[in-house]
Amino acid sequence: MFTEIRGLNEECGVFGIWGHTESAQLSYYGLHALQHRGQEGAGIVVTDGNSLRPIKGEGLVNDIFNEEKLRAATGHAAIAHVRYPTAGGGGIENVQPLLFRSSTGSLAIAHNGNLVNANHLKQNLERSGSIFNSTSDTEVVIHLIKKSSHSPFRAKVKNALSLLKGAFALMILTKDMMIVARDRNGLRPLSLGKLGDAWVVASETCAFDLIGAEYVRDVEPGELLYITNNGIEVDRITDEVAAPRAMCAMEYVYFARPDSNIDTVNVHMARKRMGRELAREVAGIEADVVTGVPDSSLSSAIGFAEESGIPYELGLIKNRYVGRTFIQPTQELRERGVKMKLSPVVQVVKDKRVIMVDDSIVRGTTSKRIVRMLKEAGAAEVHVMITSPPMTNPCFYGIDTSTSEQLIASSHSVEEIRVAIEADSLTFLTPEGMVRATARPFNDPNGGLCLACFTGEYPTEIFSDTVLPHEKEC
Image (tube, rainbow, N blue to C red):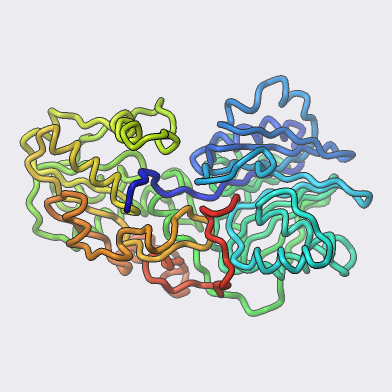
């Protein structure tokens, strides 16, 4: 049943800059910093104040952009996007930012997240004559803006965004304005920075560090920013009472780069605390060495080792020059692909009782192969420690987890999963331990985290016709 080796995939990453003559080049570097959030396609749309010019393609950032293209894309503002690898579909038409031209002016849009009412909105729009060119939620937003009876343009945008339900961190670019918005629960990260006199916006603060920008603050949930040559104007998407914060917990566990700060909390330090919490929850376990599964679990493994007093070692090595194994056509080739991606350090694990720290178990197949790999390298025991709770529910907000039936924890107990992955023991971090570890400075439920994939408690309404992220495009 659980045959795929794909792990989790984030929907995408966004980047924008206003007020810099090298906006295209800086967007290129920003996308480099966000490459981990999407490897299937990338794009940049630049404005010089007169027109919008796109550059986009399928593949990695380095494969799409070159010096000649970037030099030709002159302008003082740009928005950019990296897109994650999906299970089906694809195509250049879904690579963002999406650019739309009309008699009333051109605009581009880039979006990270997933709208739970996209199908409902799309059906209504089609009944009123709209025709869609992509399978993207993002195109729905454009149609809502164009069909809005409100005036002027800012009011149209505000009205359109007020109709959206679900997760979104998005940017809209016109020839004289950049609009930035974040959903009412803050499900997806979005930060604001400055580079000299230029304003910068990005999914993660690591993009600021790469281009030398200074972090200013996070875009607040439900906030709407209008950035022009006159500065920033702050508004709200709706006048409703603020919704509880619900940042995706998996940003801290897996998706975000460890050098990023999400809602003022450093990801590396949060992961170390997750490792420490897990070590406290399994106090007394006997082992000789702690190792983490590269890359997202290394910080947690260090924290586990520090708290438990068991030495940390680099027991698994990641080969960074291997392509995506999930595209291999046969199971045998996929198996070889995993071995190409990870290699055990035999001298570290041979004859040792190994604690293997990992961030999550989705389908269980990858965990099983890594446990086998360690035992084939001579490990006497392999104890698997997971720095998140069991994933029992699908995500409707932008993570590429499939239906509940395809999540091993939705139908198997912890002991059954342990047997399936052939580990000597298996422990998951509790939801309470995860909330403590992230140490978010908010009084909202769960510290302002969305734990829906672990608890089944969704922060928004879920529509009956909601399409899961893996069934459509970002």
